[in-house]
Length: 113
Length: 111
Image (cartoon, rainbow over all chains, first blue to last red; front, top):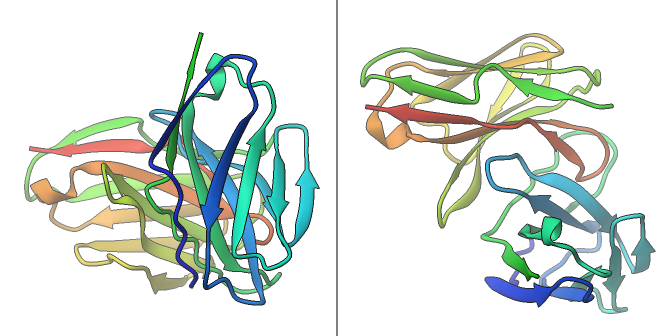
């Protein structure tokens, strides 16, 4: 299982774009990259997942370079409610069976007024 | 709207008590998981179940057992609670590749 490294904390202001980068040098061919968000006293919530290039949904964008050794979660125009811990995970992608998720310490994002 | 519910948000028990944490999902998922989350340690997998009556140990199963009699329900059991089991317990069920839906968590305090 590939280990991930991401910043412990980040600060931003309302209306700014926030980019959180995660490195995963040992990512395997079958691994997908997934990001979760967790608010205090709640369980993590799936944000976005990708395998290569760029993925965008209504919440965020995920940029993955060709070598897939890193990925960047981009949150456009953050608000105070985006203050949370963001986890980057890599895991084997197959439709059946069990795949194990490993949550690291995450990145604590604080959005200021 | 998909939903994972846990029986209690907060629970206080005494050392040596038997503790049951219940988790129910309404998404017909086959895979369900129990994690605990502690400051500085992230989420750690205790047990998971890939089908009814099937279970596998995670990374930290000692002191815990599980039960999955019905597809929608996955129970975590602390046979004899100890103070080092004071933690936030999170249940999840698996949807697609790497996507798990988490419940709100149960904050357990063992005195």
